[in-house]
Amino acid sequence: MPNKEMLLIPGPTPVVDEIYEALASETYAHTDPRVVKIFKNSLSLTKRLFNTDGEVFVVAGSGTLAMEMALINTVAPGEKLLVISHGYFGDRFIPIAKAFGIQVESLQAEWGKHIQKELVEEKLAEGGFKAVTVTHVDTSTGVMAHIEELIPVVKKAGALFILDGVCAAAAIDEDMQKTYGHPDYKLDVVLTGSQKAIGVPPGLGIVAFGPKALAAREAMAKVPGYYLDIKNWISIMNDPGKYFATPPVNMIYAFNKGMEIVMAEGLNNRYRRHAALGQAVRAGLKVYGMKPLAAEEAAAPTLSCIVYPEGVNDVEFRSRLAAKGMVIAGALASLAGKAFRIGHMGNVTEEMFVKAIELVGETLKEMGLEANMEAAVEEFKKVYHSV
Image 1 (cartoon, rainbow, N blue to C red):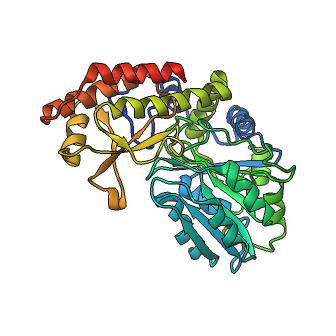
Image 2: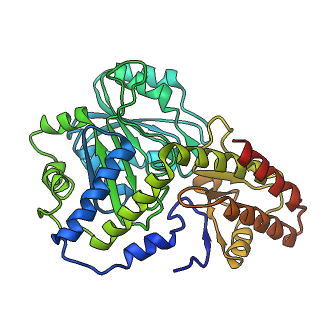
């Protein structure tokens, strides 16, 4: 099934033929040994992705469902949660927490910049926070959180570290056994969805719990959920032949194939490719006078929020690109109409972005602006191959 468009939004991302073929396979019973074998393999690959010595959960749902699962199984109603936000999707933890009766406070960075570590230390010094949430890459701003700085601060304060990896997992290292200055300073929960850097269609929520997060659930008498209670899922994840709720069989096929593709490339190779793509796309677009919202030291490998030069109408620009078969996303909140967001993650290629930069240049010329397409492509290639 050939892709008719270049879907370069923050997600879903382009799906390759092997994954489409897996998705289109015959639907068997969810307890059929053939399905169980595929599901077990996908769970094993997910554990490898996060290098966790805890448990992983792959369930029907979205990244937002994964956020809920992460919260209600670690923070009880009435307990305190600190949300560290670098944009719109970091903020989403706030209404989720409130919906479950969690006492939530937040620290919000200026859009396009990192939160200051000192502000986090000051807030945590107030005491009593059960957990802290951080979005690894916020899809509204293109900012990648500096978790190397934040994890030691959070863990020193005795809180659990919950990482939203929706726009990062399988593109940026999220090793749950990696330590950050102390043997106990590790990630406790990482969550994601199937449709971003893993490169599978939307439909699965994926959450990894480390030992301390699992212990937090054990210490809770109950949680405000049934479908999202990990105690109802642990036996299924250990033996997918058992039943709790019907899994999305064909999505499991697709997810398994997607994870096989991730592992075949190799995690370190995949991380390097995404880092190179992010830097190269931003460098190429800068030739057109398009400025990334985030400075390079804060910018993500997986997507970029790009501010328009003077004289570009957002709706016209994106509509013209869409007519050429290239789809990008508008910006959110106060940046709406002033910027666009372009994803560069998953099973995408250098050739795809050479074409994308050419199409951006063509479109700018059609709108009466100058655009040196040859120089933009050359800059993209130079940066991509140097990284």
